[in-house]
Every structure is written in C-alpha cells, then in structure tokens.
Image (cartoon, rainbow over all chains, first blue to last red; front, top):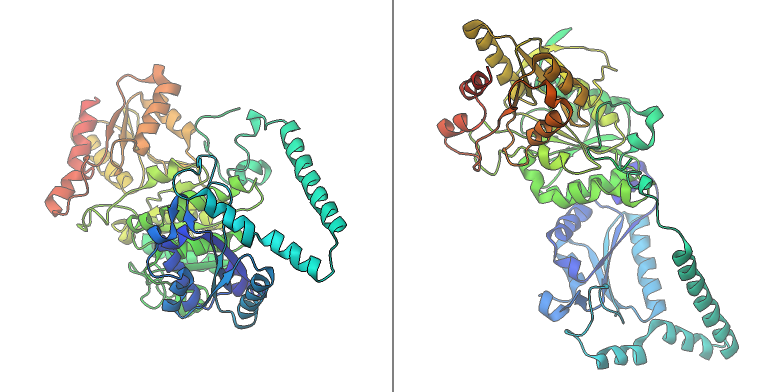
Length: 216
Length: 325
C-alpha cells in the first residue's frame, strides 16, 4: 500500500500493525528490506504484549529489543511504552512525518499488555501468573493512567469520569445486544464477494464455470 | 497476422497493457535490466522505464505481498515468478491474501493482480524448479487460473488477465516460449477467460488437455490419424478456473471416449476434477471409462531421460489413447 501511495504520488503512509510474535516470520525481514531499499512511506508498529499466543518473548525472540531488527536495514527504530499515551502519540507523529516528508520507513515497538488470553482457545492458565496481570492493571493500565493525569490537570472531574465510563459501557452493551439480535447471514450470501465478476454479472468478461459446488 | 513466438506474444501483451493503463506495472526478479530470465520482458525497461518495469530482490513473499497491497489500492501489478515453483515461498501472499481479500472485506476491496511465470517440467531443471501448481490455484476460490498453449492465446489471455478485476494466475511454459504462431496485432485482441478451444476436430476420441500437453495431444492425434485411421478431437482447456464445462461436455457427447492429458501430478490434479465432472454430467454418453495421463507420481526427475518419460510424452499418451479404442 505504501508503494502504491508513493507511485501514485499521494501524500500518506501505511501503518502496518503486528504482534511481537509476527516479527519472527521471514516475510517481516523481506518487507523491511524492500521498504528501506525503495524508500517506502510505511510504519511498522510492533504491538509487543510480551506473548505470541502462549510463548513469552524471552522464549520466542533473540536479539531484543525487537524494533532493533530495523537497524540492519537502515530503518529508524524506537521502543515506546504503550501505557503512556503522549509518548505513543509523539512517536507515531514523528514516524508519520518521516513517511510523509522523506518517504522513509520506521519500526516502532510499543510495549503493551493484554488482560485476556490470545483467543477463545486460550484458557490463559499455563504461561503467566495472575499476579503479573494484576500488577499491570494496578500500575500500567493506559486508560486509568490517562484518566488520572487528566484528573490531576483538572480536565476531568469524578462526575465526568463516571459519565464517560457509563456512556462507554452503554455503547458496548448496545452493540452486543444489536449483534445478538441480528440474524445470521442467509446461506444464499455464502458465495457473495468471492470474485468481482460474479458480483458484477452485467460487466463480466469471462465465461465458463467458476464455482464447482454451488449453495444456490 | 504476424507469426511470432509465444515469448514475443507475451511481451506484446505486457507492452500494450502497460501503455494502455498507467496502473499496470511489471515486477519480479531480473525483469528489467536483465531483460527477464527468459527474455519475456525484453525491451520493456527501455520503453517504460524503471518505475513501470521493476527489478526486485529475491524476495517473493515481499514483492508478492507488496503487489497485493498495491492492487488493493487500485494498481494493476503483474508479478513475475522466475518459476512458479518459486511462488511457494509466497504461498501466504497469493493463497491467503490475494485470494481472500475481496471475501474478507465483504466485496469492498478488489485485488486486480496477475501472478505469472513458467510452470512446467521437461527442461531438466530438477524437482524444485518444475512444479505445475494450477491445481493448487484452481482449488482456491478467489483465484482464476489460465494455462495458454499457443502464442495467440498467450497474448489474448494475458491481456484479459491484466484487465481482469480478480487475481489471475497465468501458468506459462518455458518450452512453449519459442513456439511460433500467428498472433493478431489488434491492441484490443482479447481472449476471454473460461473459453476452451477446439484445437483439432475429430470424431472417434476426445483428448482434453491444457498447457503444453495440448501440443503433445496434437502430435498424438496426427499419429492416430496416420497410423491407425483414428480421428481424435483435441480440446484445449486454456483456462482452468473458470472452466469451460460446456465445451468439455460437448466433445464428450460427440466422441463418447475421452482421454485427459496434463503435466500435473495425478493425485488431486486438474484432470481428477474434470473426470468427475464428465461422469456427473455425461455418464450416459461414455462408451468407455475416462482415461487419464499425468506426470508420473514422483518428484520431478532431474535426469533428462527419466523426465522425458515422466511427463506425458507422445508415446505414453498414444499408448493410453489406444487403450480407449
């Protein structure tokens, strides 16, 4: 996408998000090489929550910090604390400027955490302690830290915080209710959106059979 | 009409489409300065410059992924693999990304991309350079797959593939690159995907093939006619997905005997699906079981002698045809 932006002469940047685990895939390095070689406006954001599914960073990665891997390709890199909103904002701002003004890539590693397991298939019982989770919640929860900061600065009051919390919970609740109340897609929709041509039969240029077992 | 090679036909298609639409670019290993490993892109760098004809590092995953992203942004990249065998290190980008983006975006994002390169055996380059993955690609909803067998088809179908709004895998053949044939010069000469071609009319037996196997089938048909007085019809599928099922059934109903020839390996090869479709839709028209000849079911042999035997050659195809008569 960054290549297309550059080729089309559009001022912009592609933000490419990945977890700490994904940095161990070969395509990451191939991509870093092309981005630097071709001066592409892309920002690689490594959201490092310390675990690739159930494998902790110390068990999955050599050569930390992970962002330093950009160094080998002459890409500017830096590590930031995800619980500090202003720090993250400033890091993204700098990387965006580098992309937009100089058409150069960046690698940003944002150190963060997750309270829940990786997915519904992760009971979250085998690879970390409850204490670790509680410790983060207590000291580094980014929303609570930002709330406290705004409270101290007088931007927020306790009443405003309660109102914001309630509005957010209500919205989430309403979304969940809407989702649960919505019907599942009809079987007739199963074959939509696969090919542009089958969705636009009036403009179709090919012929022949394209689906071999049809739901219709 | 000028008589040109399959290679020149591809070159013309690329040149014309790159001229026609500023969104079309060609990228891959050695496509620009080196003029293409097989000289398919010869002269294009001089004609269009390095912004449109782009040399890449040996990083199939990166440049395939980059091209998928560019296609999502409205460009029409043509990605060359030096061999389709090398696409295997970009499996995720082709089979997971290009094929699924439209579906997973609810039809909001198209991927008008062409992946192209040779996919064939017969040149003594060994097991890791001789794959014919048209069956994998055709097994993946979201992808289209074509295997042109003549210079005219190479041009007309490549142009159709580049103008197509869906991802198209074009499987070429290094042995066919030197094949000569008449090719229209019209800049809008398009052969629509999914349209098979009767390469030879006949009455006694249908040989259905794709890619270079079509050329082998034609030689076998000639022998059958000359030595055995048998009139074989040869159907060139041209396109695997979409598939011209109508043309397949028509020839089966005409001759009532069918031999399927392909360079694919037999298990779950393209012809396995075609044999199934024939028995499903034309069972009562068959006077004999469907016969099939593929590459012999081992990794591609390096030894020239062995490989010449392994891929469907004239004698093996002829012997199988005789079993049907």
